Amino acid sequence: MAKATIQGIELAYTDQGKGTPILLIHGFPLNRSMWDPQVEALSRDCRMIAVDLRGHGESETPLWRYSMDIFADDLSSLLNHLSIDRAVIAGFSMGGYVAFAFYRRHRARVQGLILVDTRPQPDSPEGQQGRFKMAQTARKEGAHPIAETMLPKLLSEKTRQGRTDTVDRVRTMITRTDRIGIAGDLMAMADRPDSVPTLDEIKCPTLVIVGEQDGLTPPADAKLMADRIEGAKLVTIPDAAHLTPLEQPEAVNRAIKDFLKSLR
Ligand code: MLT
Figure (cartoon, rainbow, N blue to C red):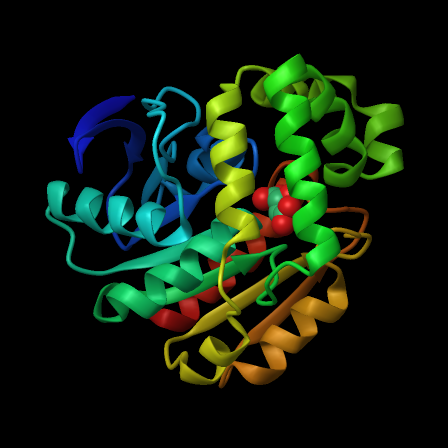
């Protein structure tokens, strides 16, 4: 693990392997360890950079503003710090929302996009209300009830019944997240702009991955992204809900490897 002061905030990241740089952006309310299976398997051929966004994991948690644009600018500054001009940007769920912001603000740096279990639409008014309620729960009761709400959304029934190690791992990731980081994400997600118009602007190689049973960002959203982004490839992962990189790591790694081959 390494740390760097980026835009005045200390960010923690993993930088492993050599080759094409792939910047991995985690989802809500997780941290960079959700990408461990990808870092492990793909760092033999690529430079895998997994970062804890501000407010998460081992990064600093400022009591100040959070937004997709701020997250994206943190990542662009981290690439400067690492002397990397261009990278493949891979975002899971909220990380995908950050990837869209990154594309809008720093597109010259994007060698390719990997959009994993995410969606381009903004929150509905009901969705925003749900974010508000969840932030109040986090403030009053901390991260534990957030973990119990999120687990059935992140992992399929089969995984929750049969893979206690995976369930415990995800629960620990969430319960270790500072409530300020949780509320920061929720406010940032509630305020995020519509990225549907961005889909028509994306002109880099793009891979879209979705779990067959993803109820949070369903396969229909993945299809919308793959249909609207020129030349995008869609891979649907069987036996997985939302958190496909941890639920079905081999299938996700295979999809990413095939995509990277097509870049060379
Ligand atoms: C995520 O998995 O990052 C979030 O749950 C996505 C969302 O709530 O919109």
